[in-house]
Amino acid sequence: MGADGIADSYNDSSVLFRALEQLGWGDLVNVGYLTWPTLPLAVGGLGWFQRRLARRSLALLEARPGELVLDACCGRGLTTAWLGRRGCRALGVDVQPEQVEQARARFGGQPGVEFAVVDVTAPPARAGTVELADGSLDRVHCLEAAFHFGPAGRRAFLREAHRLLRPGGRLVLVDFTWRDRDPSTVEALDPGRLVRDTWHFEQFEPLDRYLTAALDAGFAVRAVHDWTPHALAHYGRLAPPLARFLGTAAGRGAARLYRPGLRALTDADWRHLVELAHAHLTALVAPCRYSAMVFDKPA
Image 1 (cartoon, helix red, strand yellow):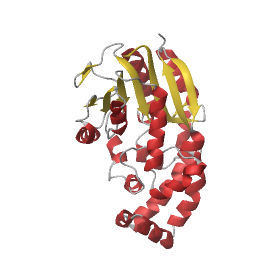
Image 2 (cartoon, helix red, strand yellow):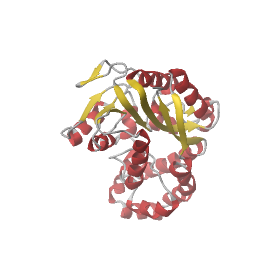
Image 3 (cartoon, helix red, strand yellow):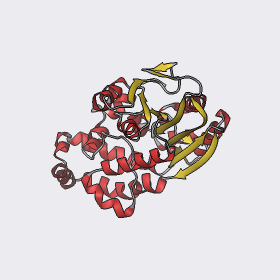
């Protein structure tokens, strides 16, 4: 897996990311974990829900103080920092040098935390001061990033995670999973590649193929949690009326008042955002699950 193109999904070259930054994206870049009782908090942006999702994902690790944890695709480093604050030795890695640079600037001075540029589908023998030898890790965490890897990259990541984990170690992998057994059906749902080019990926992995690949790598499937109702379903309900609202001059004016940073968007940007919203509903929200998978390496 290379970094080519992926960085453009998470910087100002993407009009969608520029809009999402105004809604709280930045510290974390995930869809968030929403429930109906907490939905009113969305008025303050999505950051609270993103932190909630990250906390739930990290809780599945059951990491203990002193354990060495690889935070794969750590982005700007917040989840790695949280692991360090819990007493873990946390190595945050990302394929994007810009993200690692930001993570180091924000959290590099925190005890027990280290960051490095690493392709987790083909990790080196050492990352910073941490030796990545067979059985050297206690836990591996990967939150909403493996869809970038491609089918071969996801299989390679599972094999490498199994190799690096000690017996009894655990991998928590949270990702979009395709409902159809044939992942190529995304091509008919995203004919203009609006979704795939925005996030730089080709296909989502069907859940059964994910589990088969994990078993083939040597893992035992400890648990599979379906977080679709909380991570995706709310978008399916809220996005259509919101897109219609933002498609009007009055709606765009209200959005600019709500988040002044949105004033930088042009009318063409707004039209593209509405187009992207409809494309994501068709090619991501409706045909995907959101799965939290817990894989253990047998002791």
